[in-house]
Structures are given as C-alpha cells and as structure tokens.
Length: 377
Image (cartoon, rainbow, N blue to C red; front, side, top):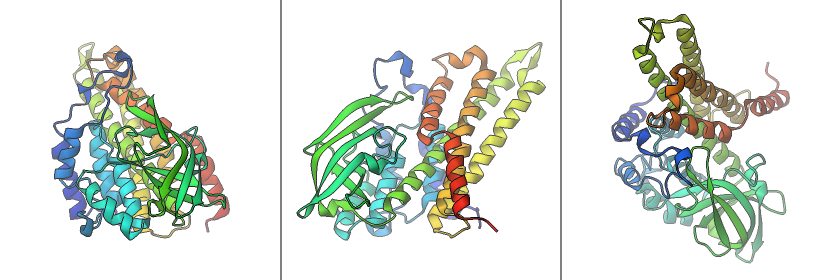
C-alpha cells in the first residue's frame, strides 16, 4: 500500500485550509451558557463557500459535477474542518450522496446528486438507531406496499435533521434484509423532535409512522448499509484526529508561554512527557485512519474485512481524542475552563465524537470476533 497523497487529494487539503482559515472555533457560545442548542441551523455561509470550492462534491463522479475522488480525500478535508469546529454537515451529506452514487438507481442519482454537488440539496443520515447502541437498521421496519414502501420506527440523535432536505434512514425488512430509504424532511408521517448533543449542536429524533416512500427512493443493494456505516465511522475518526491535533497545538502554545519559577512549563519533564504521549496517540490515530480510509476507498482485500480496519481506527480515535483533551485541560489548569477561551468548545466536541464512536472495549470485542472468524496465518 502507498499512503502518499495524490496531487488531487493534496489540492483538496489546500483548498480546505484556505477556506476554513476564517472560521473561529470560539465564535459560538458555550453549550453551558445557552438554554438549548447553540444555533438553530448550520453555517449556511460556510456551506456556500464549500460548494463554491467544489468541496461538497469530492466523492461524486464528473457527470454529476464532482471530482471523482475517494474517502481518503474526504477524510483529509474533514480533518481540516474539525481543526476549526466547522458547523456544517460535510460528513453526513457527502457520505449519503456517495452511497446514492454507489448503490442508487439511475433515476435517483440524476435527481439527487447534481443538486447535492452544488450544495443546493443537503443530506444527512440516521445512523444511531433507537438508542445509539443497537444497529441503526433495526430501529425502523420497512415493508413493501404496492410500488412503494412503508416505514415505521424511531431514530435518535440524527445530525442536522431539522435542516437537511433528505434523511437517509436505514431500515430492516420482514425478510431480515437492510435497506436505505431517502425520506424528505417534512414528509407525511415523519416527526422530528429537538435534541441537543454533548457539543451543544442541534440533533433530531425521528418518529416514522407509516411513512410512504416511492420505490426509487429505497436502496436495496446488499452491503449498502454496512458500507455507509463504515464510511461514516471513518469520517468521524478523521474529525477526531483534526480536533485532537488542534487541541495539542493549542496546548503546546499555551505551555510554551505559561511560566512557573521563571521557566515555561513546557520545559518541565512531567509536562513534556504528557504532551509526548498525546502526540503518540495522534500519530496512531492518523495511521489507523488512513488504513481504514484506504480499505474503503480501494476495496482492497485483506486477511480481515475492512470492518476490522475500521474497528482499529475507532479504538484509537475514541480513546485517543479523550486522552488528548483531558491532558489539555490538565496542562491548561483553570484557564482551560474559561469560556472566553476556545478549549471548552473543543472538549465538548471531543466528548460528542467519543460518544458517537462508542467505547474502545466494544470495538476490541468486534475485532476479536473478526479475528476468530478469520484466523491470521
């Protein structure tokens, strides 16, 4: 394998860096200081800039107005967005559109993808199921009704549900198969209740009561749900990496200026060792992320399914981002809790990402099951 980024991927990173440079992570009030979510909508102005820079269409084919790149390119851009806590549904909309391109019908592709590429149509994904712990497709049932489908069930913690134009809802059929249904926001039978994430961002709980969806809006392809899940998870690992790198940089700058006994605290061995440990965490998060993204992008075979590489990336991202922000808070002292300083925002976002990824122990169990089913050597 070759982890050298292509010229096209590097160009996407440079465009993302230039675009996100003006985003200020401390421009949003602390979740603790507002009665509900920190904002009613995502950053529409930034979304328009992303569309203008062709960063919303990275994964789409040229015939739909895209660049034809892969999951690695998306993760590179997500990494940059997380450094600034950019409030945009870049991961969810990109992943949903890519799933439509890979598995959707020709009619669905033509109807959805050109508008998604231009930023005119926003997509999101209901990926957390009823409780956030069980497979998402088990929370909603889908049964055929004439030339359409009827959906019933509940999905919790759906990002940008109140603002997206379509929501990709995983569901299960009576035959035990998984499908993906594109449900328009405001569709008859669809209810959305407000929720607030750990980061203070707005989420939605979906209630589907006999929601009727046309047959062309349902993706029945085998493996589509699992592939979308792995892409969303890998993208979340990219967000965790970018956030962690920003926090470590912030901590390095602070400890280099903060003095005790006439010396910068960064020169103290205990401080340097903790910072070095977090740097190692970030490098492990990075290499496991690119391994997972490479497997998803290329479909390369291996001793284990790609889900194994995704599980390893989740182990490092979930534990790593938590350790990075905890060490940052410790090394900042009380200053890290000052709401005029952006570290509290990064901490809140990191906790949300950690909870989204789930506990490392669960992923280690998944990895163990895969190893048992696919013995190495």
